[in-house]
Length: 320
Image 1 (cartoon, rainbow, N blue to C red):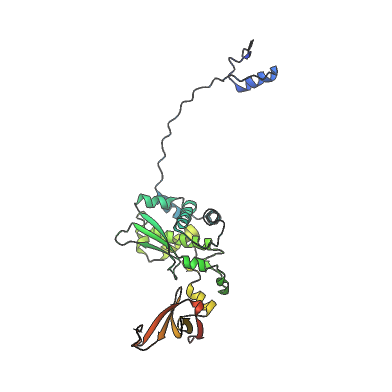
Image 2: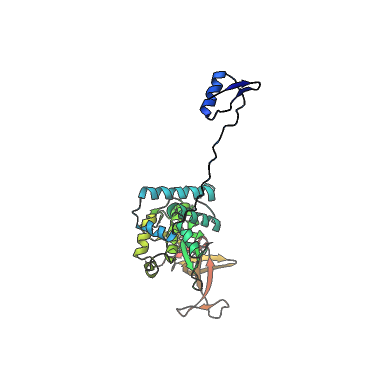
């Protein structure tokens, strides 16, 4: 390589290697602006877009593979931690639930545990999925609904009542372990994710890409149980959250068949508990000429009241 001094310093013409340029600077001890290096023109190669794998085939392949329990557990923990951090402000025992939070939980499960293939499959088959927070669901933790007139429209409903009554202060009186689908849950976020995992398999079984046997079997048939065990490690299909009925019985002693006393306005009434949901349905015997009288299946007439269980005083328990 040739170099010559000029009135502006050193002429770097011919310096094509950065290493040679640095060596020249070190030898001269000069600090000079670097001349532009010769650059070979790189021809840009046209990248052909890769064809995305069929989501139905990817899901069927996932179901055929032997599950890695360690990886699966790590993925479920990652989903839980990300959901709590991004949607529940680091409060795993959240006090309220929104449709946006439900959708986010669904997306995280699909991304981490199903490779995002469930969402792609729904779009490919032209299916619509909406989410609903259902405070009036008092016995079911979750439910997938499909319109009969529009079989590609689905709604995934989650009971906020059961989730928020579980792990509450009153729940301590119930004094039992909370197990959802065979998993012991320590907070509401964990219980929510286990319920969603379960309902997402019901949704998957609605898809045309899945074998016909998925749609012909019973609601929680053998194929369903194998699938939730394969993908999520579920060993049961029951969502054993604390129901209003259980909480009323354990905490307040109110249950169907017992006799209670309550005060409504200026009246103090005694009646029999007919049902317990979010409130106790109480039947108070009355004359058939009373303006509020209704005839029931036993041929007698009653007035019907819906009373919060904490406002009921138990007078007599039903026979064992």
